[in-house]
Length: 289
Image 1 (cartoon, rainbow, N blue to C red):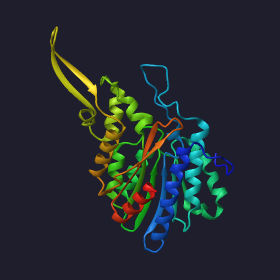
Image 2 (image 1 turned 180 degrees about the horizontal axis):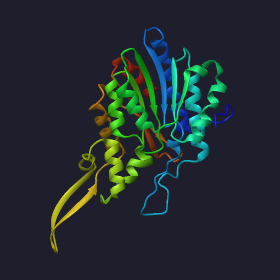
Image 3 (image 1 turned 60 degrees about the horizontal axis):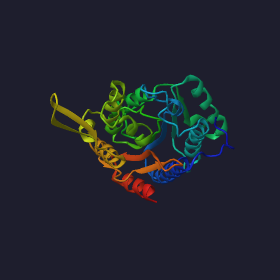
Image 4 (image 1 turned 30 degrees about the vertical axis):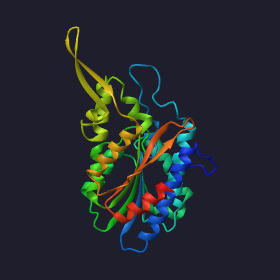
């Protein structure tokens, strides 16, 4: 899984990796001059990229853009890039729910023997583990960069809230703009209850519906009839999620980076949020370049 000879996947994965790498290098240089202990945390280190949501109304996958080859390669890249950054982090935490994949992550310790004691492979649900880490441990003398990179909509808003409460974690998050959210927003608003639940958990509110749909009433053959129409697009969905991040984080990148597949369809937004204004300046510069 963590083969040095892997070629990176599509352009969107390379672009994503480059942004994370540039930020981690700047972060490590700054933090190395301070007294904090600082960690790199990679959540959904394997299973997130292999959880596929299917549309119960059809036999088609909602995510035809991806291949196992491409997603596996990106996971390889994100882990190894963090471990290659200099100066080194004090701790590297890789979270993986699937036991077999968690065991395969152990190979990182052999590949980077000098960092072996700094690497922790956590076999746990990412939302559960991160919530506990954020809420039940002291962050007074600790700082971290957290990369949340789920395949779809596994990150819950309650996890994002817990992260924000530490006021010590710089969050990089892949928001599933086109790969999931937009596809679940059916044109007539007839969204399956299971998908509504996912959207509620992702945004942390049911208010998304009134932002993405218009409801009108008119007189029809059988009296008043209600019509629901989708009014959202990629830009409005992006802006809404940024506004949601601002409700819990003091500093949020105004212009997250959209990531496109080879057919120029937006898949994700690479978002950043932090309690630190200097971190935001660095992150927005990285995103804009």
